[in-house]
Image 1 (cartoon, rainbow, N blue to C red):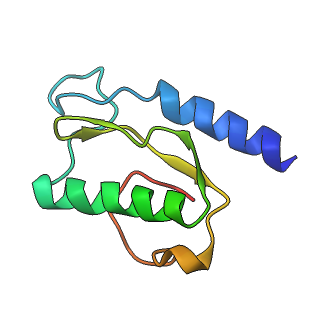
Image 2: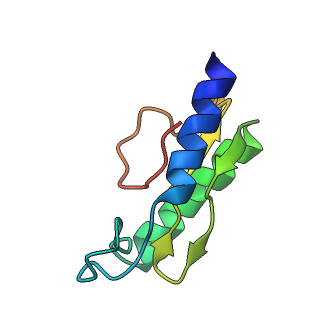
Amino acid sequence: MHDRFVAALAEAADALRAGDPLDPHSQMGPVAGPEQLAQNLGYVTAGVAGGATVTAGGTHDGQFMRPTLLAGVRNACGWPGRRSSAPCPA
């Protein structure tokens, strides 16, 4: 059940369209700024270093970060439970 849910959520995340917030076809806009992008990417890096697996996203194009799904996140990676504007469910 878990694996099917993760696969379905990863597929849905991959299907989201990031782009100009004024474009009616965009479903996600850019992150707030370079500092926020660096923080978001740091969370992904910390998660992977802590044993998590990126099942969707984890990349960016300029200020547009792909919706990211991490599986197998452990509390030891240092960020579960922190508030973040990262598009990153874990």
